Image (cartoon, rainbow over all chains, first blue to last red; front, side, top):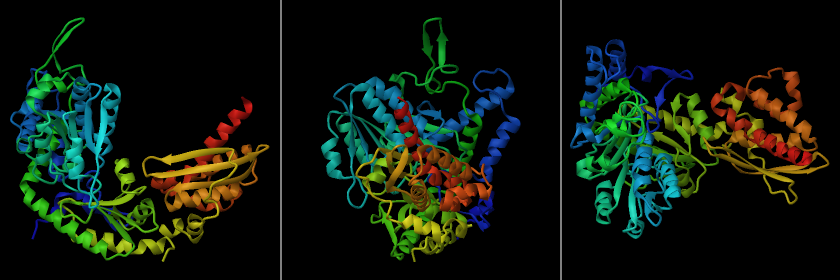
Length: 406
Length: 147
């Protein structure tokens, strides 16, 4: 029997519209355990000062907390050095940093950027802008009927002209896992760099940047129990070293003259301005919590819930599922109720205390590719229970009658 | 809560087909879109002598946006452009919770049934999509008249 995680997450004992909260929107953001909330309170309550600059004890304390968090993240994703870990606001900022600093500098007309149709807008729109600005072409890998990447498309489109392969590790709509290790090897064969969007993978499965041989990895803290406003960019040191700064200003400089500036070493080169130290403390506590539970346990819980949810949803003749005919997936179930718009489904579930996401999930090209305008999405994390899934199913059974369709 | 939203009347209007068509002689075609949820409608108006002779729409949306669009079209047929803008303003005021007086809202006819949406912030955009779209279309037409 698993530990009762609910005790660690006070918010999960709260009520929504008079019902116990069944929180099934974990791909959007996760709830925070008490240990994380305590770490943030502890930082602001006893250690707050601007890091890196002060000579006094409190500032040194703040610096230590911030740099300890960086060490923790580096070990967590198995980076070779803490210089390869840049703190950002979230995965979106990390991906923008890569697009503008690496993309704009290294791409020319005739070059190609390759992404998949299943990208979140944050790993799509920046590349559109880079393509426009540099004259490069943006190409897409499409999916097979079961939602996996088309191997044929990969082989056809990943060529010597490809300079950047930017790909999500796990789709935020379908939950399908991409084999980024194999893709990294293929990208390197043609001389491209691989950018891995780890927003949906790092919180749920062990991710080892050296094993994958990723050139870049981006992820958000808030999707893995940490506070909002702190994210991570991992980049190989030799690549980051060669890149120009993204944001400039305080803390990222070495010497500033009237007309010229030399920049700080990594990782400070990419961390302009006062950073989110409280957020980094929270992220560090979140990693400790996840390591305490263990990814084996997390994966097992999510797998059980996903399988159970898909089995039960398949019994409902008026529910259509997307990307659920493959075993290669985790934690995310996208579906529609026949003749009912996802927004109406989400409102009816909300009235029963069940929180899901409805809409295009920041992946409009994918939703269009699936032939839909929007979908419902239930996504699980370690603290979800079978009861949450039962309540999702029970309430879905009422949707068509509430809508006067049955 | 739900029975005040998904009423028989809303269900009927959300499923109604009469106004979901293409106008042969549309004076103006306006697209309305809620990027956050994917509701996407195209509203067509046929206007002559400053009066809306006919209106119709196509597109995809939730029950609330579809019902709201349908009721709006029924209300607008035969109205002058000035009346149309005033009624759109009144409706949006009702959904924002700024106009609550039922006598005042009688002018909205069946669309007044969407008043309860004002208590559901997550669905306000669904209810007002068509009305904002209409307002934009009429503004464009007005601009054309004065130009």
